[in-house]
Structures are given as C-alpha cells and as structure tokens.
Image (tube, rainbow, N blue to C red):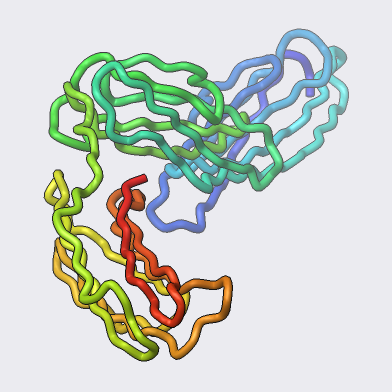
Length: 296
C-alpha cells in the first residue's frame, strides 16, 4: 500500500467459554490506529517505505490470548503492495503446586514460598510475588522467594495472603495464592507427653501365659495421644484405649530361639516423638517381663 495510505481492518473473534469477555489490542511497528482497542479500526501507514507488522492480540477474561500478525509492504510510488498474514495461539502457564513453610509465623519471622509451574507452549516464565500485608520480599521475581511480615494484619488467622503472578511473556497469565497466619508472638512450644504410670501383670511368663501391660500418660497441650504396641514374638491382642491410657494383653510364645529374646514395645506418639519402650529378656525357660521405659 502507498505511504501515508489508510487500511481498514475488522477482526472477528470467538471464545469457547460462555461469558468470557474479549479485549482487543492493535499494535504496529510504525503508523497509527484510529481505535487500537476496538475490533474494527483503521491503520494509517507511515510516510516512509518499508515492511510493517500489524499485530492484533485478543485476550479473554481468564488471561488467555491469541495473536494475528499482518505484514504490510509500504511503498512510495503508490504501486501494488503485498501483505502476509500469520496467526499464533498462546496458552496460559499452568500452576502445579504452591507451598509455604512455615505458614504460622510471628511478625518479623521469615517464611519460604515456592511455586512449580510450566507453560504448554514451552515459553519461559517470569514470576512476581506480592502480599496482602506489610512486609519485605527476597527474590520476589523467582519461583522460590522469602517473605517477612513487618506489621500485624487484622484477623486471627489466614490474615495475610501471598500471591504469585506467573507470566509467559505473550499475554498468558496465571496466579497462585497461599494464606499465612501471622501473630504478634511466636507459636507456643510443643512439649512431649508425660508418662504418669506403667503397669505389667507379671515380671515373668511361662509358654502360652497371658500378660497385661498398661501405660497412662498426659499431654501438656491437652491433646489426645496415640499408642502403638509391637511384639517381636508371641501374640498381641487388639489394645483398648482412651485419650490418655492404653492397655494390651500379650500371649507368650511356646518357645524362643536361642539368641532372639522376645520383646514388647509400647510407643507413645505426639508430634512424631517416640517416648516409651519396653522389652523381655530370657532367663532359662522363664521370660522376664522387664518392660523398662525410657525417654529418648
């Protein structure tokens, strides 16, 4: 087309998702558009000759976009020009996971956040972290970052939201958000359970004899406790228990191989801590129920 000439352009775009709103953005390497954000517009060529690229980017309300590039040959002599059309479709990045550790922190303590994302088109991704509460970031433009709150936000928990914006550089966007619980004081320390009482019905057992074991404990935080019983030989019946007590019966084996004394172990768990254990030793034909307890 001739230099300084005008070209009328009309775009028709459709989104397969009902209700999505489409936006249009016309750009060019030179020249100007009469309505760069409308589907229908006119482009005025520059006064100089050369090849110019006209690009239309259509984006839906979800951040997905498609591009059409029209290449125009602008000439000074007003002769016949030529155009080349190219269409490109872009998919938004996909977020696989988003983690923060720890998620419950006091003001001034740092949490680490990390996102795993990929792009269906193989585009390189960029990251931008932000927070709904006051604080500072380290590596806020990488997939792994660190955030330190500086002021206490309103609300008792989930009172600060960390958001990462993932972009593929071609209009494709996605976001991920994780919530933090920020307080004025550090979280209360977690103390292990306390053993109040242990019981065994006998200190020794003959083959086939049934013994009873019991453990009574408490938790400083008032949480329920979990009890697990194990035996290297013999038979353990299903234990009975309540929140702070567990009782089990064990039937001694008819015989024991030399060098492999039977043992019974009671494990009391709170926050992954192993607190108590007991065992048997062999004294001739008598199996002594030592049931010694320890706290690692």
